[in-house]
Image (cartoon, rainbow, N blue to C red; front, side):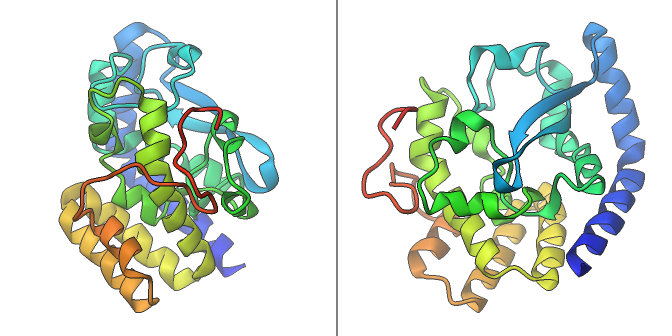
Length: 244
Protein backbone atom coordinates (compact mmCIF):
# COMPACT_ATOMS: atom_id res chain seq x y z
CA UNK A 1 0.00 0.00 0.00
CA UNK A 2 2.81 2.44 0.90
CA UNK A 3 4.60 1.67 -2.38
CA UNK A 4 1.44 2.31 -4.40
CA UNK A 5 0.76 5.62 -2.62
CA UNK A 6 4.36 6.71 -3.28
CA UNK A 7 3.96 5.70 -6.94
CA UNK A 8 0.84 7.83 -7.35
CA UNK A 9 2.18 10.88 -5.53
CA UNK A 10 5.66 10.98 -7.10
CA UNK A 11 4.47 10.18 -10.64
CA UNK A 12 1.80 12.88 -10.49
CA UNK A 13 4.30 15.44 -9.20
CA UNK A 14 6.81 14.27 -11.80
CA UNK A 15 4.40 14.98 -14.64
CA UNK A 16 3.61 18.41 -13.21
CA UNK A 17 7.24 19.39 -12.65
CA UNK A 18 8.39 18.05 -16.04
CA UNK A 19 5.62 19.79 -17.99
CA UNK A 20 7.69 22.92 -18.84
CA UNK A 21 10.08 20.65 -20.79
CA UNK A 22 7.63 17.94 -21.75
CA UNK A 23 5.05 20.12 -23.48
CA UNK A 24 7.54 21.88 -25.82
CA UNK A 25 9.08 18.49 -26.60
CA UNK A 26 5.66 17.08 -27.52
CA UNK A 27 5.08 19.99 -29.89
CA UNK A 28 8.59 19.64 -31.39
CA UNK A 29 8.05 15.93 -32.12
CA UNK A 30 4.74 16.65 -33.83
CA UNK A 31 6.21 19.49 -35.90
CA UNK A 32 9.04 17.20 -37.03
CA UNK A 33 6.84 14.91 -39.14
CA UNK A 34 3.21 15.78 -38.30
CA UNK A 35 2.65 12.35 -36.71
CA UNK A 36 1.59 11.52 -33.19
CA UNK A 37 4.26 12.59 -30.66
CA UNK A 38 3.52 9.48 -28.63
CA UNK A 39 4.61 5.90 -29.17
CA UNK A 40 2.35 3.34 -27.52
CA UNK A 41 4.56 0.31 -27.07
CA UNK A 42 3.38 -3.20 -26.17
CA UNK A 43 5.35 -4.48 -23.19
CA UNK A 44 5.18 -7.47 -20.86
CA UNK A 45 4.20 -6.63 -17.30
CA UNK A 46 3.54 -8.39 -14.02
CA UNK A 47 2.56 -12.02 -14.41
CA UNK A 48 3.39 -11.95 -18.12
CA UNK A 49 0.40 -9.72 -18.88
CA UNK A 50 0.93 -7.41 -21.83
CA UNK A 51 0.13 -3.72 -21.47
CA UNK A 52 0.56 -0.59 -23.57
CA UNK A 53 3.38 1.64 -22.39
CA UNK A 54 3.24 5.32 -23.36
CA UNK A 55 6.49 6.91 -24.50
CA UNK A 56 7.29 10.26 -26.04
CA UNK A 57 8.33 9.25 -29.55
CA UNK A 58 12.04 9.68 -30.21
CA UNK A 59 12.21 7.64 -33.44
CA UNK A 60 10.72 7.78 -36.89
CA UNK A 61 7.21 6.42 -37.36
CA UNK A 62 7.07 2.57 -37.54
CA UNK A 63 10.65 2.28 -36.28
CA UNK A 64 9.74 -0.97 -34.53
CA UNK A 65 8.87 -2.78 -37.75
CA UNK A 66 12.43 -4.04 -38.29
CA UNK A 67 12.32 -5.97 -34.96
CA UNK A 68 15.53 -4.40 -33.63
CA UNK A 69 14.69 -4.09 -29.93
CA UNK A 70 18.01 -2.67 -28.68
CA UNK A 71 18.84 0.89 -29.67
CA UNK A 72 22.36 2.26 -30.16
CA UNK A 73 23.25 5.93 -29.73
CA UNK A 74 23.78 6.34 -33.48
CA UNK A 75 20.68 4.39 -34.52
CA UNK A 76 19.47 6.06 -37.75
CA UNK A 77 15.86 5.62 -36.60
CA UNK A 78 16.32 8.28 -33.90
CA UNK A 79 15.07 11.71 -35.00
CA UNK A 80 16.88 14.99 -34.38
CA UNK A 81 14.47 15.89 -31.58
CA UNK A 82 14.71 12.28 -30.39
CA UNK A 83 18.37 12.66 -29.44
CA UNK A 84 17.45 15.51 -27.06
CA UNK A 85 14.49 13.53 -25.71
CA UNK A 86 16.67 10.51 -24.98
CA UNK A 87 19.51 12.53 -23.46
CA UNK A 88 17.21 14.06 -20.85
CA UNK A 89 15.01 10.95 -20.46
CA UNK A 90 11.84 12.78 -21.50
CA UNK A 91 10.62 9.61 -23.20
CA UNK A 92 10.60 7.98 -19.76
CA UNK A 93 8.63 10.79 -18.09
CA UNK A 94 5.47 9.94 -20.05
CA UNK A 95 5.55 6.50 -18.42
CA UNK A 96 4.40 8.18 -15.22
CA UNK A 97 0.96 7.83 -16.83
CA UNK A 98 1.36 4.05 -16.76
CA UNK A 99 2.34 4.33 -13.10
CA UNK A 100 -0.77 6.36 -12.30
CA UNK A 101 -3.10 3.78 -13.90
CA UNK A 102 -1.31 0.85 -12.25
CA UNK A 103 0.45 -0.84 -15.17
CA UNK A 104 3.85 0.13 -13.81
CA UNK A 105 5.60 1.20 -10.64
CA UNK A 106 8.19 3.93 -10.22
CA UNK A 107 10.84 1.39 -9.27
CA UNK A 108 10.95 -2.07 -10.77
CA UNK A 109 12.52 -4.08 -13.61
CA UNK A 110 12.31 -2.27 -16.92
CA UNK A 111 9.45 -3.68 -19.05
CA UNK A 112 10.53 -5.61 -22.08
CA UNK A 113 9.01 -6.76 -25.37
CA UNK A 114 7.67 -10.30 -25.58
CA UNK A 115 10.44 -11.34 -27.97
CA UNK A 116 12.94 -10.64 -25.19
CA UNK A 117 10.95 -12.01 -22.24
CA UNK A 118 10.57 -15.26 -24.18
CA UNK A 119 14.35 -15.60 -23.83
CA UNK A 120 14.28 -15.28 -20.03
CA UNK A 121 15.81 -18.07 -18.00
CA UNK A 122 13.69 -19.57 -15.18
CA UNK A 123 15.55 -17.29 -12.77
CA UNK A 124 14.88 -14.23 -14.91
CA UNK A 125 11.18 -15.10 -14.93
CA UNK A 126 11.13 -13.64 -11.41
CA UNK A 127 11.43 -10.24 -13.08
CA UNK A 128 7.80 -10.73 -14.11
CA UNK A 129 6.65 -11.33 -10.51
CA UNK A 130 6.39 -7.59 -9.81
CA UNK A 131 5.14 -4.51 -11.64
CA UNK A 132 7.72 -3.24 -14.14
CA UNK A 133 9.23 0.12 -13.31
CA UNK A 134 10.27 3.43 -14.79
CA UNK A 135 13.67 2.96 -13.16
CA UNK A 136 15.76 0.73 -10.93
CA UNK A 137 19.47 0.07 -10.35
CA UNK A 138 19.93 -1.37 -13.83
CA UNK A 139 18.42 1.72 -15.47
CA UNK A 140 21.00 3.93 -13.76
CA UNK A 141 24.00 1.66 -14.30
CA UNK A 142 23.15 1.16 -17.98
CA UNK A 143 21.79 4.62 -18.76
CA UNK A 144 24.54 4.66 -21.43
CA UNK A 145 23.15 1.57 -23.14
CA UNK A 146 22.97 3.39 -26.47
CA UNK A 147 26.67 4.25 -26.30
CA UNK A 148 27.58 0.66 -25.44
CA UNK A 149 25.77 -0.58 -28.53
CA UNK A 150 27.07 2.21 -30.75
CA UNK A 151 28.49 0.81 -34.02
CA UNK A 152 27.32 -2.69 -33.10
CA UNK A 153 26.65 -4.98 -36.06
CA UNK A 154 24.02 -6.86 -34.05
CA UNK A 155 22.58 -4.67 -31.23
CA UNK A 156 20.14 -7.39 -30.10
CA UNK A 157 22.86 -10.02 -29.68
CA UNK A 158 25.31 -7.61 -28.03
CA UNK A 159 22.57 -6.50 -25.65
CA UNK A 160 21.86 -10.12 -24.65
CA UNK A 161 25.55 -10.89 -24.18
CA UNK A 162 26.88 -7.73 -22.55
CA UNK A 163 24.02 -5.85 -20.92
CA UNK A 164 21.11 -8.17 -20.18
CA UNK A 165 23.07 -10.45 -17.79
CA UNK A 166 23.93 -7.55 -15.46
CA UNK A 167 20.66 -5.67 -15.85
CA UNK A 168 18.81 -8.82 -14.84
CA UNK A 169 21.07 -9.42 -11.84
CA UNK A 170 20.69 -5.85 -10.64
CA UNK A 171 16.91 -5.92 -11.10
CA UNK A 172 16.65 -9.24 -9.24
CA UNK A 173 18.75 -7.73 -6.44
CA UNK A 174 16.25 -4.85 -6.21
CA UNK A 175 13.35 -7.31 -6.00
CA UNK A 176 15.06 -9.23 -3.22
CA UNK A 177 15.70 -6.07 -1.18
CA UNK A 178 12.62 -4.06 -2.11
CA UNK A 179 11.35 -1.41 0.32
CA UNK A 180 9.79 2.08 0.12
CA UNK A 181 13.07 3.52 1.41
CA UNK A 182 15.03 1.88 -1.41
CA UNK A 183 12.47 3.13 -3.94
CA UNK A 184 12.93 6.72 -2.78
CA UNK A 185 16.73 6.42 -2.92
CA UNK A 186 16.60 5.07 -6.47
CA UNK A 187 14.21 7.80 -7.64
CA UNK A 188 16.64 10.46 -6.37
CA UNK A 189 19.65 8.66 -7.86
CA UNK A 190 17.85 8.45 -11.22
CA UNK A 191 17.38 12.22 -11.21
CA UNK A 192 21.00 12.72 -10.12
CA UNK A 193 22.24 10.49 -12.96
CA UNK A 194 20.91 12.92 -15.55
CA UNK A 195 23.20 15.63 -14.17
CA UNK A 196 26.15 13.63 -12.85
CA UNK A 197 26.19 9.91 -13.61
CA UNK A 198 29.36 9.23 -11.59
CA UNK A 199 27.67 10.41 -8.41
CA UNK A 200 24.68 8.20 -9.10
CA UNK A 201 26.92 5.15 -9.64
CA UNK A 202 28.61 5.84 -6.32
CA UNK A 203 25.17 5.90 -4.73
CA UNK A 204 24.35 2.51 -6.25
CA UNK A 205 27.69 1.22 -4.96
CA UNK A 206 26.80 2.32 -1.43
CA UNK A 207 23.41 0.57 -1.61
CA UNK A 208 24.91 -2.67 -2.93
CA UNK A 209 27.60 -2.73 -0.24
CA UNK A 210 25.02 -1.93 2.42
CA UNK A 211 23.02 -5.01 1.42
CA UNK A 212 26.12 -7.22 1.20
CA UNK A 213 26.23 -7.71 -2.58
CA UNK A 214 29.08 -9.79 -3.95
CA UNK A 215 32.14 -8.08 -5.37
CA UNK A 216 31.39 -9.19 -8.92
CA UNK A 217 28.03 -7.40 -8.94
CA UNK A 218 29.50 -4.32 -7.29
CA UNK A 219 32.26 -4.04 -9.88
CA UNK A 220 29.75 -4.52 -12.70
CA UNK A 221 27.55 -1.76 -11.23
CA UNK A 222 30.48 0.62 -10.93
CA UNK A 223 31.42 -0.15 -14.54
CA UNK A 224 35.10 -0.37 -13.65
CA UNK A 225 35.75 -3.32 -15.98
CA UNK A 226 35.08 -3.67 -19.73
CA UNK A 227 31.84 -5.50 -20.47
CA UNK A 228 32.42 -9.04 -21.74
CA UNK A 229 29.93 -11.71 -22.86
CA UNK A 230 28.37 -13.21 -19.72
CA UNK A 231 25.66 -15.84 -19.18
CA UNK A 232 22.33 -14.44 -17.97
CA UNK A 233 21.20 -15.37 -14.43
CA UNK A 234 20.46 -19.08 -14.15
CA UNK A 235 22.29 -19.99 -17.37
CA UNK A 236 25.66 -21.67 -17.78
CA UNK A 237 26.45 -20.40 -21.26
CA UNK A 238 26.53 -17.06 -23.00
CA UNK A 239 23.61 -16.32 -25.32
CA UNK A 240 24.79 -17.00 -28.87
CA UNK A 241 21.64 -15.96 -30.77
CA UNK A 242 18.36 -14.16 -30.18
CA UNK A 243 16.63 -17.55 -30.16
CA UNK A 244 18.92 -19.03 -27.50
